[in-house]
Image (cartoon, rainbow, N blue to C red; front, side, top):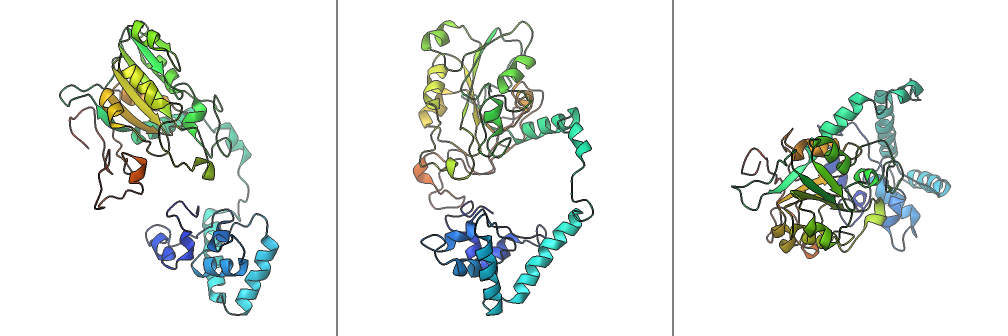
Length: 355
């Protein structure tokens, strides 16, 4: 578990953590793993009292500890703590039992290595269809029309001319995010897949002209005589601390691009990110539709399936979408809970109301 992913403090430092995570119906038969060097955060300066860190973590219910460098020191101190009774031997037995149980159930003792023949089926048609389904079911429609009587989606497949723009419109790497082909993720065609631009091109009628310009000038937008525009913006892929930001505005001047396009053309905005980003009220007011696509991965056709009405939107927000950075942390039920979109919010094209 990443030590700061739930709270700003290492969760395994608290005895209550074990009870909170090992819910009987979920992981009562599983085990808890620390983050990379996670236990070092249990003292200041970090890792200065290593023996104390070990005792705190293990006694709180940590079963497996990720020790990239000081494993010999870890073993030495752990043995000392058990011999002196600071960590009960029963706690070690419990951790070992949990780890071995999962390994036995998973069959890793009988089949320690994956079947290399399976490489031939990875990414097959069935896999991609399933991934495509997962994409369309995860999309959340946040706005559809400037008023409920005139929905903007689904988009017309037979439009005369469409503008597709934005840093994330034709970038499979950005769609995949971090922890994928590489640790922090990357840009471009990092893996076989379909970008959102390509999905739009494949979905519209043959007579429809799709114009792609990542960052068009105002003259292009105004003179293009576009039926509508699709602006795809979002975050650069990241993992761990590289994703830590004090400012969650849309990167690459995304708000400016949205505003410039929406001032001239009816506009759908698609946000590619693993978390909510700041969408200023004046920006939201200008756009005709807004979709949170999260990180759809390689199957951009899943996005097009919903944009053009082949499937309806079914997703709802798994988190609260805040208005401004200074609202964070924001929790449903809080005294000052005033989000841009509340937890559980989501629209359908087939209805003029929230799901």
